[in-house]
Length: 138
Image 1: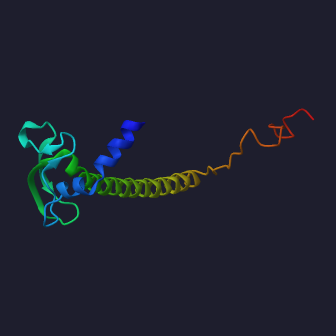
Image 2 (image 1 turned 60 degrees about the vertical axis):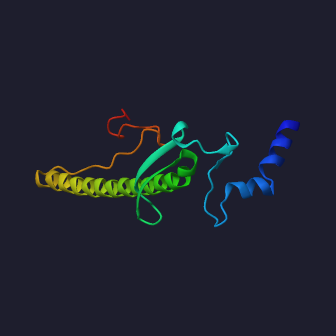
Image 3 (image 1 turned 30 degrees about the vertical axis):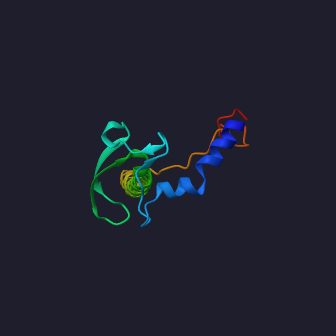
């Protein structure tokens, strides 16, 4: 527990925070994992990302630390999930509409042949007598 308290105090000191940022408030090159400047291509977390920035729509073609890419990738992931949810909802609405139309066509076909659709009640209803009175032997 003491190690955690000391580590927390060291990580959040003013000097540490200033080392992370350059003078013009741009991200610095200090890596908190190795506690020195980023080793870039020697690090397995240093990666190339190419695509569109979900916030600005600008094209991205840049090398940087995987940890620094996380906020942008999480925003992109959230946007993709929202689009997927909207597509699933749209598909569901189309299926419901199609089922209603097919049911109506089926009922119309039955009525043309002189067959009337019947409402079926559940066997778990409170009525324990499932046979009509004429067939129950009374």
